Amino acid sequence: MGTQSEKYKAGATRFEEVYPRRASEDPEEFERMAMENLFSEYWSREGLSTRDRRLLILGIVAAQGNDAILKLQFSAGMAKGDLQESDLTEIPIFLSQYAGFPLSVVANTAAQKVRNDLSS
Image 1 (tube, rainbow, N blue to C red):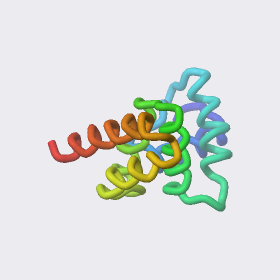
Image 2 (image 1 turned 45 degrees about the vertical axis):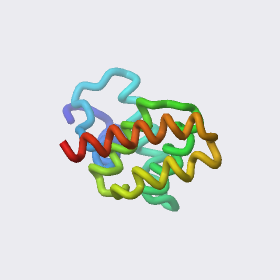
Image 3 (image 1 turned 90 degrees about the horizontal axis):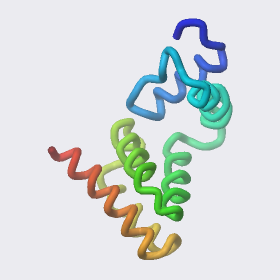
């Protein structure tokens, strides 16, 4: 990790537990701040599991219709074992009642893309 701060290193460790990729060894300012704050502080707090946090994010980004983050979270959840294949069906169905049908279509499409990637 080079000359990164201890907070960055702690955040990078947590990031790598959440996502199936490594944190940068030479981060830009935005990534450095995400590791030192978001991952070192918020993702590392006790009280919520990684799955809990991921489900919260999925609900929020589904309500926003954010296809890119939906795919990222579904993929990372599958890769890290926080989600099961049945979640790729059940989560969009459940969200349809809270985010509304049009936005749940976005979530379902993202989940289907992840499911298709898993089977190819």
